[in-house]
Amino acid sequence: MKLRVLFPFVAASFLSSSAFAQLTAADVQTIINHAVTRAVQVSPNSVIAVTDREGYVVGIWNVAGGEPTPTQIANAVSKAGTAAFLSSNQNAFSSRTAGFIIQQHFPPGVRNTATGPLVGVGFSNLPFSDVNRFKKTDLIPSSSSPGTFGSPIPGTSLDGSPGGLPLYKNGILVGGIGVTGDGTDNSFPFISGPDTDEDVALSGQHGYEPSSSITAGNVFIGGISLAYTATSTNFSSTVVLRGNASAVYPIQNPPPPFPYPVATFGGVSGQIRQPIISDPLPGIINGQPRLTAAEVASIINYGADRVRTTRAAIRLPIGTQMEAFISVVNFPNAPNVPPTVLGTFRTGEATLFSWDVAAQKARTAIGFSKNGNTTAVSSRTVGFLGQSNYPPGIDANPPGPYNGLQEMLSMAPPNPNFPNGITIFPGGFPLYRNGQLIGAIGVSGDGVDQDDIVGASGTHDFLAADAIRADQFFFRGTRLPYAKFPRDPGL
Image 1 (cartoon, rainbow, N blue to C red):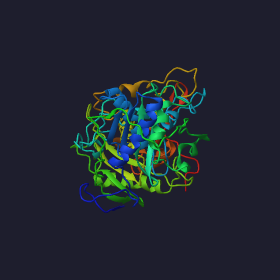
Image 2 (image 1 turned 60 degrees about the vertical axis):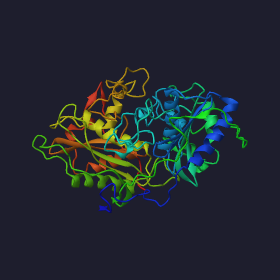
Image 3 (image 1 turned 180 degrees about the vertical axis):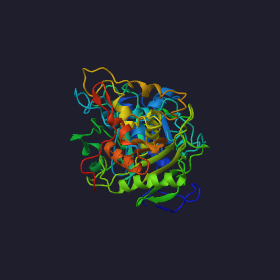
Image 4 (image 1 turned 30 degrees about the vertical axis):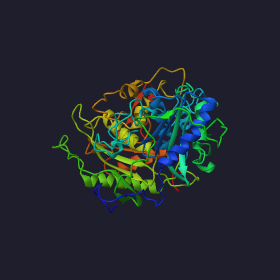
């Protein structure tokens, strides 16, 4: 492990790669001009939002005029932010892609198939998150995480309805555009056909498109090509503007990049997104010491080393190394005390939605595992028990016992044990010392099986005993899952 900078305000890092680009106010105006011109023709009630890659809102326009409603703002921002957060320089995903991979069946609508790989991800990056979310550019800190440096936008989260597309400059992801106005802002059920919001967004994306070689249709999960768009547009270079920019969200430059420290763990370069610290709570846990900063760094190091050798599921071309966020949290060992993030490392340019989700996964593993050599539960286990059918995917079966729990824990004000909600897909594992629960690791950024193998690698020195792992137990006659790794994961 090599740390070049430990304190987060010392030196700027523009990712591990030298490739860097940002939107400008002129870019935002151009994108909105293109979208408004199309909206005037096909959807005159459209509200158009643009976010930068970090989730800052850099412009909202109401084609009908006046200030858009809070619901319109939330829908447009959620779509724009979803496209920005799910994409990278090596994969371009849309809000339609999100809707395709979050349903109760994958592919959507095919009965008696497993749930989508990211089922439940719509309940992440919530406005009350203490880790990461969509935000205003006012840079007002509300937690120790720079991902919340900016006032929250009520009603936002990841969104699975069409109308959100990523934006690129010279092959570098710089943000997203989101459009609402045609009345289809509902990711359930999945919208498979053409969509007017997507039509308008495609015109806005003109000149800021990704390479066709990295769009979601080139990514196969379980042999299924992912959805990207199902709509065409009629772009016009003659700008016709109607309506006005929002007074609350004017067209502007994004904030300058935050100076995250650059570090190398496990041979992988990246950024320390949240400082690596020792468990700040005093005392011991049932006779066992709490995690130290050195141990947190070691956990991250084991995980990053696995990232270095693992083939990506969503990045292109095929055979590319995966990227991920790796988060470690403490075990408070007290009710209603939020698990503290003890460190977060972003390898390369891992997808930004994964920051919040990695912490969610770790906190999910903490919240559902038991102390004192009883039961070790992963986020995969929680998801298996949390679907509308149990076992998941078998339509005739009743719901699992945790069905509806994620929705309940995603309401504001947040449950103090889960200050950014929970995740019900793989990548989170508890950490044990001599049979005592002391923390958890959460990993997100690629395919869920990739997240599992990286998370499990991070538990190297803090394994749950085999006898207490969830996969040693049955519920309603079905063995519970704990971990599942990719076939042939190596590069």
